[in-house]
Length: 378
Image (tube, rainbow, N blue to C red; front, side, top):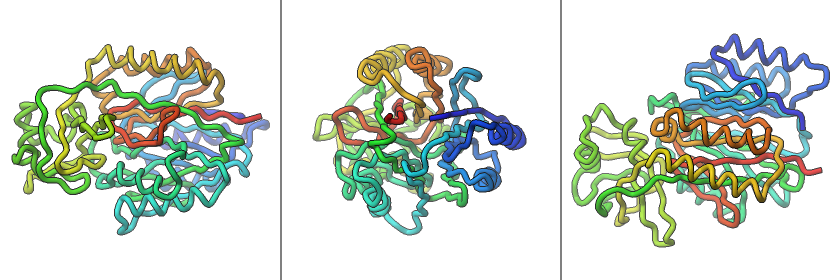
């Protein structure tokens, strides 16, 4: 599999570098990943890939990352582009618009497309729309495709503004939709891992009124007021500061879930989260212990490397909270991938992550480092 990646600060730089790659004699890309700031002209980017008959998986981001032999760094307000020369029989790409579907029903719609292609499918997926309930969306997909589905991806960002996010392919841009690539897992093997490291803080709280991913009251107090009081912040600091202090949900399956704030309603004093926060749940605030998070991630990457020594390309869907909380340390847990595999790693900082840990069903996460290896089977 031939792969070329590059970053760009402007649309003109993107177009110049893309033109240069297309002109290479020994490179005929059929598929591309684009993770870009909302400051870029998305429709124009799409047209460039369409013009060259390249299928495009695109999402807007809240920070971009690229580590390869020529570039190494974490960027803001930029674009990262990865082009692959891959057999078109090995994958199917589709963009869905959500329209008026619930998050769960939208997931089922996507699930029907997944099972319609290949006997052993695996999936890279992205979704836009700040009101999407990521947990219910993933549950809807699994309702159709089953718990054994291998799936990785993330919710689009918008440079930390929390106003409007987008997914796009080579033809369409959508602020409420999903884009996905279904691979033939016998030809293109996807493996990966998801890890967080955030730890609980303080006392247990109870979600006393919620509806899906909207929380109205916590311990019978307005949810927004609870956050403002606990974090000693002003309403204008939300939802951005809330990303670093998500709720840790103590689930009945003994697998804790993290839920990050993605929006607020000042009048109703409610909070919008990236995924479901069930009424009656026991929760607590959580935060990053900093250096320990990075060391934990590095340890789990090394464990993953022991069982997956080969890869052609890595994609990383990392929560924007890691970018904010870890600062420059965030590069340490990314650089290790280059050190171990010496293949490119491209990705972006998300508003929610979707991943599959070895031996587990795929799930929806927040505050997570979600790494996926793409390897052509020969």
